[in-house]
Structures are given as C-alpha cells and as structure tokens.
Image (cartoon, rainbow over all chains, first blue to last red; front, side, top):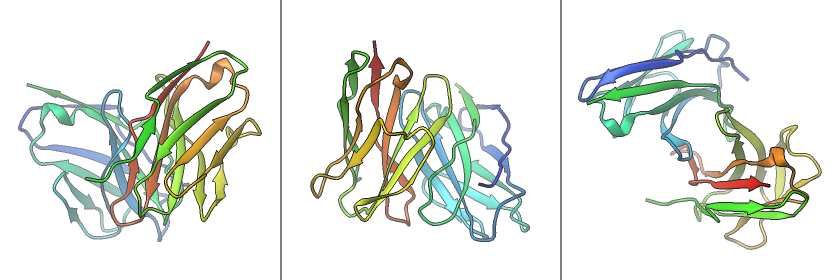
Length: 109
Length: 112
C-alpha cells in the first residue's frame, strides 16, 4: 500500500477556497488517487478520484502533480457542511481502501 | 441518489453473544466491503467480498467473524461471540467502479 502524508488539520473561513494537500511519493503506476471525507458521526463519503490529469466534479476539483507524487483537493467555496476529515487514498481497481489519519478541516462562519 | 442501507443503526449486546449486522448494498454493485472504526481511531478494513466469496480479509477478521450474501440484496456481517473490544462503528460499502465506494451510515455496536 502506498504511504500518504497529509497535514493533521487545516482551517478555512466559509465561502473561501480550500486546498488540501497530500503527498503519495510511493504511488504505483496503476494507482488512482481517491479522496474521501468523513463528516462527524457519518460513514466515509466519496469525493473525487483521478489518475493523471486534473479532475472536476460537483463537489470538488483534484489537481495531480505531473510526477503523481502529490495531489491537492480543492474545495472552491467552503461551507460549514464541508467540515470533515479528508483522506487521500491511492488505489488500484477494487482493492480495499486503506484509511490514514487524514486532514481535519475546520470551517468558520 | 442510490444508497447503502445498514440496520440496525445501534445495537447493544452482551459479551459472548452473537450479533448480525445487516447491509443492503446498491443494487447493481458487485463488490462489497465491511470496515470498522473504534471511537477516535482510524477506519479499518475488515473484509471484501466478490462473486459470493471473500476476496480479501484483514488480521482483524478472525474465526469469530463471517460474512454472507444470503439473497440477492442483503450482505451480512456476523460476529459469533462478541468481545468488549468489538465495540465500534461498523460500515458496509459497495463499489462498481466509476463513482467510487459508497458507504452506509454505519451500525454502532456496543458490547457490554
């Protein structure tokens, strides 16, 4: 399993953009970079995933470095509902997700 | 939006008793998983299930645990003789590729 490094916590104000970084220097060539989040007292929730190029969906954008050793999850306008723990997880196929400690995002009004 | 449904939301059981946690995955998904999260700790993988058999299991998933897909819709996790340390949130997940893994809201298991 590829090792990931994420900051323990980050803070943001509501309606500001948030950039959540992740280092995954041991990622394999077949690993997609997945991001999940876990809101308080809920199960993990899929956010976005990508392989090489940047990806956008209704929840977020994912910027992947050219060497694929790092990525950044971008929330364009944070809301209070975005306060959660965010996990980046390299993954191939239908393998198990391996959760680290993630980044706890705090959003202030 | 399709959901993974877990029941019950909270189960309290006496040590040594058997419990069955139930999950209804998304109907066209073929890959199923159980995870658990002890309070304040990481989400941990227990087992994955595909084509009516276990495809991978963790060290946590010992002989006390079993999984079953008894019909076309349910996916169950059984703990034969619960211990205090089995107290945790148990999450079921299913996957069919493009949209990532979908998790249920979890069952909080309390062993007393």
